[in-house]
Amino acid sequence: MKQQDPGAYVHPDGGPTSATTSNTTFSELGLRSELLSALRGRGYEKPTPIQAQSIPHLLQERDLLGIAQTGTGKTAAFALPMLDLLGDHETEPDARRPRALVLTPTRELASQIDESFRAYGKRLPLRSTVVFGGVGQGKQVDALRRGVDVLVATPGRLLDLMTQKHVDLGRVEIFVLDEADRMLDMGFLRDVKRIVTQLPAERQSLLFSATMPADIAKLAKSLLRDPLRVEVTPPSSTVEKIEQRVCFIEKRDKRALLTGILQDERLERVLVFTRTKHGADRVARHLEARGIRASALHGNKSQGQRERALSAFRSGGVRALIATDIAARGLDVRGITHVVNFDLPNMPESYVHRIGRTARAGREGAAISFCDPSERSYLALIEREIRRKLDVVSDTAALRQAGAVGAVSNPQARRARGPQRRRTRRRRRTYA
Ligand SMILES: Nc1ncnc2c1ncn2[C@@H]1O[C@H](COP(=O)(O)OP(=O)(O)OP(=O)(O)O)[C@@H](O)[C@H]1O
Ligand SMILES: [Mg+2]
Image (tube, rainbow, N blue to C red):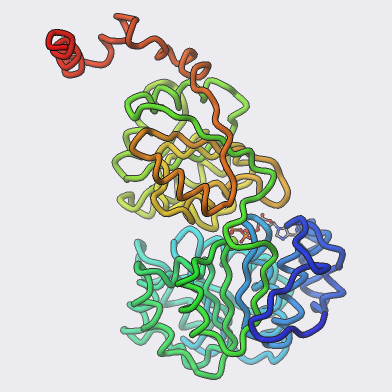
């Protein structure tokens, strides 16, 4: 592949194509045989476009900003060339001094990426480990002491371990920010900056995401040296295979609508996003009380609860996982058939990541967003971000199933809404 100018946009065959197919093979990309056989073992036949377009440049030790849609293999796009390069000049693992660092915004994503490194690198004599908060640090410290090549981390725990001198970043050759725009937004920027000051100036830096707001792109560039920008599709492009629908509804009817649509068994594995942690708990309880196996995942849960909820969801033990945006980015759970935005996100990029939990690796999926009158402005932002309109669906059928249609004219349904609302309505009727 031709070397591009710094900052150049690379498109396959000169223009955007499907995000999951490319004409190259992994061996043509120049990856070593140990990696090729691990990929065969995982059933990867061909590189995805982001892989085909990034890997040759990364093998030449270029800095890179990679933008590609959700679920199109960005992890392997950085992990494979990293393992290849690290395997090139093999050294004895040095206690506490990793040779590559990957930062991610959440613990679950860090864990998943560590697993990917282990899987892709299983035929290479390289070690990977993961550190994140919410669990004891003993095992993490032991692993670091034994020596690791690749360290995957969330920023908070990494900084803790750095302060305690359990890890020294002075030998890092390759630095990755996965979900780069999130890592460089206000929530993480300070921590990331503190970490970056400890990295050698002479290093290879890689940034990947499906979204990249313009103001953050500037910041991103300041971390990169002579970077190449590989953009498979414009930032915030959503996967074509996701059916995207919106349902206009009153806030108070959302739970009934969710229960209603879950009567349809085609919604096999459903990830539901709420704005708040309490909201997630309330929805999970509501579904459980109606016999739908559900679990909540958010930052107020212990790490043990978080891991149990996610693994039950992965294995199918739980049908609906109700989560905050903690689960919006990067998570790769097989077989999520539907994503439901119970509340619309106020950050339009979150929408792109949330719905990207379905229809991964070329599969199909659907996203249904509930939009109450107060959320209309969020919807407008989202539609502008993704440069398309969502299909509007009527909630009537689903509501009827849930027994909530005709709530105003049906006295039984009205009673179910409680005394507070009845009083208001009566008063209105009196004074109208
Ligand atoms: N070349 C390939 N062939 C087949 N499957 C692949 C290939 N590369 C990656 N995959 C699979 O595609 C899925 C999505 O990959 P990955 O999680 O890296 O996506 P991503 O681009 O990082 O998405 P996100 O933006 O949501 O983080 C994973 O299950 C992965 O195993
Ligand atoms: Mg990813």
